[in-house]
Amino acid sequence: MIARGTVGRRVLFIGLALAVFGAGCEATAGSGDRHEDPTGWSRVAIAEGISLAIPADLAPVQTAGADSVFRVYESESLQLSIDYGWYSDSLSRTQGEDLVRRPVKVDGWSALLVTYRDAGASTGLHHVSALHVADLGRGAVKLTLVVRGHSEGDHERAVQIIRSLRIDPPLRETTTDKR
Image (cartoon, rainbow, N blue to C red; front, side, top):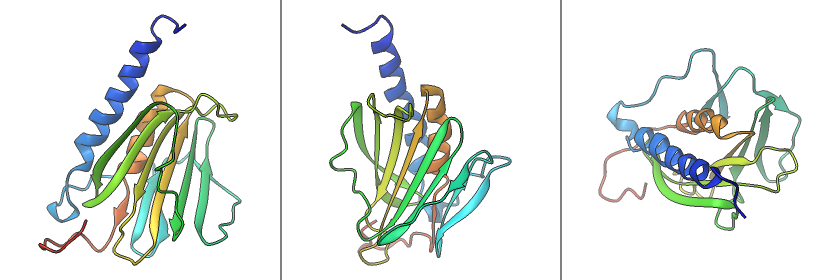
């Protein structure tokens, strides 16, 4: 049995994910519509020409990637994982409650946005927003970002983190471009 209000919260979570994320991610890098980083956030380099802004309360956690750049940042309410490499998770097997997959553009690059609720998360970080960029214009290297939060309210910060992704060089307008 579903508790009263649960369905409404789930619909609100999914709607917020699509509305907030979609509104800010359709602009191409060449359009000059990059968003300003939120005040007090720091920009971290993922690889040459690829960076992300993160809130000041996210601290790096000691990690090591076997075949990729793999980083984790945590705060009391959020966890961000970054996987940049050949075998970066495509999110194609992701499962969870209220699962939504949506193609989006981030900084002009085609990507897959996945949002869901992971009721079984042992960390208590049940609300998940993830992004996979399969073609970075760098051969077989891919990028996956996963942001987990305690509550639906953490979703807005997750979206801001994902939207802050910068991939240079900026998108070139050509008819053969796959992005």
